[in-house]
Length: 567
Image (cartoon, rainbow, N blue to C red; front, top):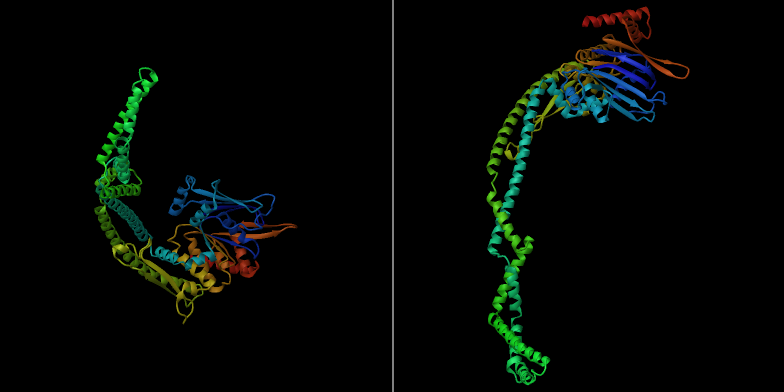
């Protein structure tokens, strides 16, 4: 709850420090006195929009600060404080907002600068503004379901289901990952089997491609080689004036003079070597003639084999040695592969069991909700009729989707809250058909509907500060008495800050603040005072009749006495 509120240089407030207590805190004053400045400051501190005109004296910043007592039973608040490592030893925290003249705001938590989204997280667990936006939440079927579960004390049952649902959901995600991995591994191993078979059939050998290429070159040019060999042998040995005979002739002629001149001797020797070289050349050519032949079938065979080798090398982007290494790798992978099918089947069996359990839990939760809904309808009708909607009728309609219960659909029809969607149907008038609340209720009816729900749930919600800003507009008579009683009942379980024009509400106040605006020559100032018992009587008298006459005071006393008697 809010322990204190400090306001400096804000709108028409120079300095103000207010202390609040438990229960119903009522703020009253004439129209235009500045009552909404108080709740406006709280709104801005807790992340509300900063608007022009909020800085009173533009030469210095506005500063707003509120101190909250920590309720250690409020688990969402405690979790949030732990999340952001906030010290809990003092059992209180303070949130502050500094607004510069350019309307830039800085937020602080216990003096530490924090971002606005974090502020709004704290707003959600510390504060409840009864506002038009809050009314719009009534149209949200998820919010309606949450309200029903809180009314029926089903939150523990719902959380148990949600925990089991998330656990099962994670199992399904793990199973999908395992199935995906198994599929990928299986496909990879199948590919390896295919590749191993393909490579094995090739019976590749290191260096085979080079040997085949050499043989191909010979086979391709065999006819030319043989023709040239035959021609060479004929020219050297067989034809008239052959090369061999010509060289021999020169050897015979120069041999007569070789002793006379060293150069001639060397020339003769070289000619002998030339004959020897020719003989060796012819010998080698004959060897070639012995090993090659014009063989078109072998040529085709070599070409096909070499094409196959080149094709597989291109396909695997590896040469023969690398392919031979690769096939050893994939055979090792194939040998080491272990299927996860057994594990998958066990997973599926576990999930099927979990889903069956979840559906039973969901059915039990639905049954509990339907019973709670019948009671909730009665309570809402009984209470909202007291707020000047005497012919109100309520019906909570269920849409429970049991879904396809086959495992393949797994959690179909279930979500973290169960299997139910609800929609609150409402009619304010006799003879008018029930319709969804979003279509059936006016703004005033929505406000009363929300107030009714808060009153019914007041003892079931985490303790927080609830702010009502002039929700009593246009209300009087017996309805005003009932509205005051509603708000007072909420104040038994929560701190309530209520800006009101109704003396009935003021008479219930545990702490009554009077707000007045004092206008000077150039500026106006808001002043707030906590009323003592006699001052409270006078303020209620003013609210009743616009004066503090003896008769008005008497009426105020009667109202206060009536409230005390009711308590």
